Length: 118
Image (cartoon, rainbow, N blue to C red; front, side, top):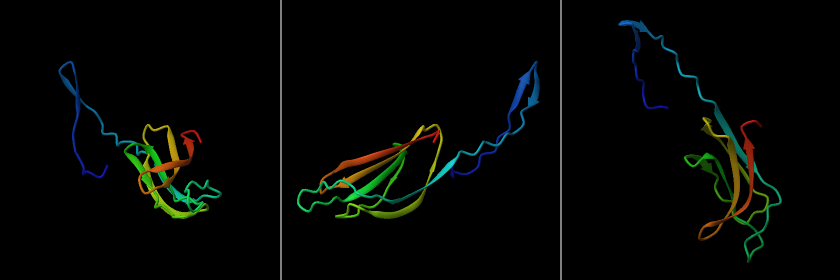
């Protein structure tokens, strides 16, 4: 995972005889390249101007996620964001959540989920 290299040797002992265990390199984990391109016809949730300030949070887990920049006063945003890379391990879903950025906090506009099987 980018933290250096560790070299070890392991021997299995049976009947007081060491049997060398051959090295097996780890199976590489699948990596996902993700682009967040655009959205259309989003809901207007800002009270005064009839628009939204949308951004997208993409996540595999709490520790594996990223988000786009908010695009202000837009219902048809084009982010053209990416690629971002996430390493797939035991996670079952890739979640995309579109949110409206507010001065304090945000509100959900919608969500899409891709399962591992899709």
